[in-house]
Image (tube, one colour):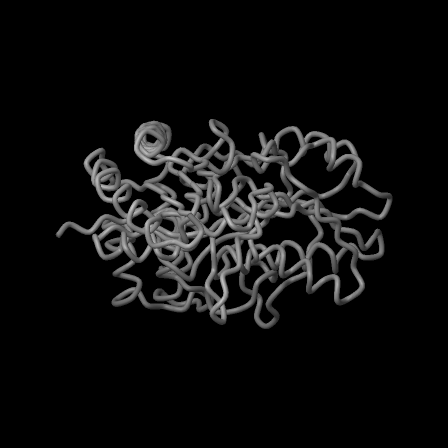
Length: 384
């Protein structure tokens, strides 16, 4: 049985060329980039080459790219580092109700330390209204953090409009772009952001490595203290092999970015149209067109998402669900709750996210397998 992977928003396989690029830095070129002899110089040169590749993909200056352990650290550093560095100016932060937990939990950490956070609502498509951002601004607002695209429902936020408005008010702007870098064109200047988070394993790079873009002149505290790595802003011996892999992944992503996005969009549309033609009482979550090219998030009424997920897995198809099973009780996704999906319906969510290796045959396989699964589960369900 062919296994079909449709959860690329969770993680992607390491591209073969990425693995090849990393391997020498796990074996013969194993030097510490902080040392002065040849082994260290080789590692340092590899770091700076990777920095240039990451910067090129997002339209930044290489000196504005700082390597981290991944998107979560980048989000934590952006929020905590800026709020601590600028707390004399103010202690107010604005974010949205549908952010990734890496942002939401950091906001709660800051709240416990006396900072104030405004959580903006979103509309039924998951869009943040720039006017709501404007209304929430206060004299003591230091930072606004709005994700570029939602990891669950795929909605792409109007960052350009928000960024332009914030630049006029000298309020810093951060975006979690973990889902967009390598998937759609991203330019930090066009978005008018001061800080941007990205992660390697979402764009066919390795896990455990990411980056934070920090616009030149942005005041931010170091997040990890120790040595003088990353120009005294992020201590710790660099993950040279991982960083080389991230750089190579960014280089490869830039080659066919728009063509790949268009191909994935076609698969997305094929799946949406097929599901709605074959299954009754389903809904598409997220904006119909202003969404990531590879994202399909649906709710199936009268069925639990985990049941569909497990039965699809039995058929060799890997997807994810917006529900989380905790302590024997189902808790709907905070994102689906924020866009107004009733809890009973939110329990039946599934997310499909396509990648490089997926094909039309994969979509047809899902359309062959899922409708009978839904019928079977509905027949068993006390909710129908």
